[in-house]
Amino acid sequence: MSPVRRGAALPIHNRIGVLRAERAMTRVQLAELVEVNPQTVGALERGDHFPSLDLAFRICDVFGLPVEAVFSRTPFEPLSTELYSKPTQRGGEADVQFDHAD
Amino acid sequence: MSSSTTQTDPTLIDRYQDFRTRRFLKHERTYAHSLPRWRTQSRRRALVVALAATFGFMAVVSVMCAFGIRWAPLLWLPACVVFFPLWIVLQIVSGRQGDAPQGALDEYEMQQRNSARSIGLTVTQYLMLLPIFYLIFGAVITGGTDVDMAYAGGLMATTVLLIGGCLPAMILGWIRPNPDAQL
Image: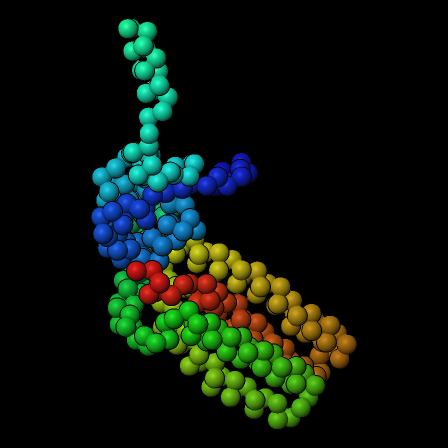
């Protein structure tokens, strides 16, 4: 055991519930794939339990995604927002450059 | 960390833990579908409350024995008659998570089991002070001649050990959510 005191507990947010729903996968099915109890999957989704690195990698393998796509220190935005949000700043700059070109 | 993850050759402890795990999983398969109506959180909590009431009754019986009531020891028998079915049913419906070997649990279950065991150990340590001080001071005051005191002290110690031994399973039975809510 490390002699260093544990720091403040930092949250680990995850997208397990969303990714599972996308694939029409039940908690029982995911639990079987990562070899844990279905209640453990529920605890992960509720944020009651932060997974070990081993379990995090196993979950990411099931979804075929990198760790940063499934787990994050900051709360995730909805996937639809991230994918289809309006490109405000870049679009405006492009318009300005286009006007200058004329 | 498990020694099996750091050593190539399994030690005697590893082999014993493997044996315990195999035996646990075999029993788990045997009783996995027993008493399905008692596996809900509300039923498990009812069992925990009933067990707590039984322990309270046992504690009262031990105190009655300390006061020298002649028929008080007989009350221990009905307490045991109630205790054993309650305990066996709680163990079955909670999957014996309180005393499960490490290899039969995942990391979240292990974390919960360790926390529950830690609380059980702490409660046992504090409660055990009561019969200890009762016996020490009682023996000094009476010169060790009071038979009722020795008997009552034994019952108090038994009650405390039962509480401490059952507390992890009681805690886990209380906090685990309904299985159906997880699907």
